[in-house]
Image 1: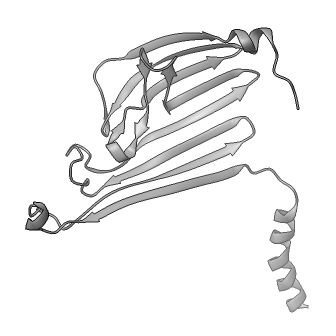
Image 2: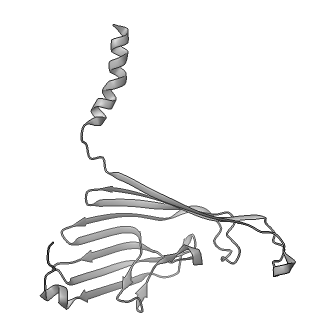
Image 3: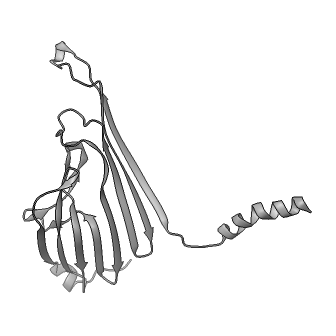
Length: 187
């Protein structure tokens, strides 16, 4: 009798987890760029203070229905040579929560944005070049009809592990006449 009871206690949690329940999805990735340095007079590579340097980060994202949230852990111990020395330490400088419903997209936390082709405003990341000027604030996007996109945000721009001075605000509207006049064909 005790064996049957212990068997049931072990198997019941797996049976209940086997039912179709939408708990959401968790996704992630990581990147580690590490280098060792040695003096080499034949290529004019000078002696460096540290033998081993690295840049690394990991993204974790949760998605359930129209809701998405995520964060990025970054580590510069110490940053690779030729990277700005202010890339130093560990932390979570990037985190966000986003909700989409019927053409409305609301993001709170960090985000990247671009107006038009990026000449007026562009925030982006290029880790291999040491660039990450993500915004930290609130962004609203709304597309009332196909071909019309409205955006607005307010926030501060990232400056290494801190924020830059000042508050940045912006609004943008994009009108695509082809999408507006000729609805995309469904396949």
